[in-house]
Image (cartoon, rainbow, N blue to C red; front, side):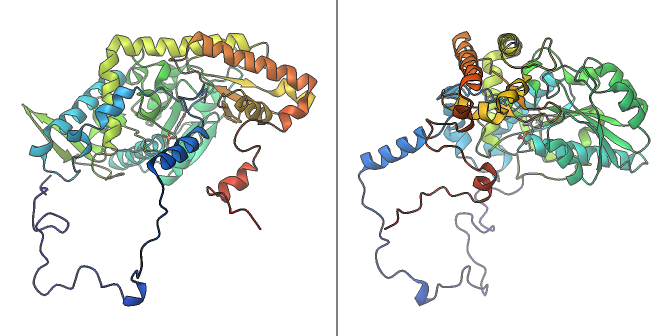
Amino acid sequence: MSATLFDKSRPGRPGYRLPAGAPPAAPRLDAAKRRRGPVGLPALSELDVMRHFVALSKLNHSIVSGFYPLGSCTMKYNPVLNEELARLPGFAASHPDQCAQTVQGNLELMWRLEEALKAITGFAAATLQPAAGAQGEFVGMRIARRWHEDHGAARREVLIPDSAHGTNPASVVMAGLGVRTVPSDARGLVDLAALAAAVGPDTAAVMLTNPNTLGLFETDILRIAELVHGAGALLYMDGANMNALVGRVRPAELGFDVMHLNLHKTFATPHGGGGPGSGPVAVTAALADYLPGLRVRRDGERFTASRAPRSIGDVHGRHGNFAMLVRALAYILRYGGDGLADISAGAVLNANYLQARLRDLVEVPHDGLCMHEFVASGRPLKKHGVRTLDVAKRLLDFGIHAPTVYFPLIVPEALMIEPTETETKESLDRFVDAMAQIVREAETDPELLRTAPHTTPVGRLDEARAAKELRVVQPPAEG
Ligand SMILES: *Cc1c(COP(=O)(O)O)cnc(C)c1O
């Protein structure tokens, strides 16, 4: 970090002067484009403005307004304390270009977070730069690609199970590699024989989600790691599902070489609405030199930041989404190792409780002990002409956000349910009661479900069109 905040030779710094003879910084606006009168802002009282925005906020559903069992995406409770800490002026008002001496505390925070993530995952090093899980996957694939190039072979193929999250194949393709899909077996786990047949001299990496998106732990993982390494490939873990493992299982010890974490799913930083997120990538010592971004190092009492020698390059500005890092470390320190292990246990307990209570209401195709989530199927309701989408829409009338639906693709009419560990038994029971009522309605009044929701600010939308022709402002009334 050579540039200082007060370096007067750099544009934008205090005291910066244009060099003599330089063209003016911005061309003057021509007269026709200049404003001639007042802007015409509406004159409103503070109270009216407040009411307007509070009313708008009430149109939205969030984790603070009701249960939010969104499988795979983990709508975690975000402690208010985290928000206060992220807003401390020393964090919030610092500039990413500030010289290292003036931001020692911020660097120490990142160093401590990296140490914590290393302890949690068992890996040797981590980058905090990626802004999302998908960006972490991309980083992992670029590292795998570069690592093989450095070791004499330009391997080009990545194997991914058919239960994987859609970002997995997308990240592989963005990294310039090819995807080959591996089927799941009747248990819902990776088909070991199919994997053994597919892995070969062109396999750069195998990308696994563990527990997988059915909420099932890949029990053959040690054998899989042996197979993958035997073929000279790397084993990548999509760690977006760490909520069942934190404090209990270190992925490095399962044989993985590289993984990403989703701080916005596992370590209580807010998400939804497009970000900002944070998807740190952790690696074995052999891959540490390839990590992207600025790596913070401790040198006695001093902290410095520099790039790794074989770095794949930057994937985000400077240190990534720093305020997310503040929240994640606050969460980790507040609970500590044993507390985090308790959280994982709570996540698994809540999911198994719901699975046990919903088993007879809807179908659970891959039944048995689940991890932090499970996948049910709305298939039994089809005989009433009701689909999973209708169940999801009807849940909104009960003040409950819909679970993830139609994913993973290998379960027809999928309802992917993840009750966060902070939910009480009472709120889980209310969800079961709502599901029981919906199943009764499917038998007695299926039209009620097909036209749901009935109590939300907007009714059933053509979702594809609503996404493509987004209109967030009410058109003015006609006439
Ligand atoms: C959410 C998720 C991702 C992608 O993470 P983003 O931060 O949304 O990019 C990848 N894999 C799984 C299993 C996920 O649940």
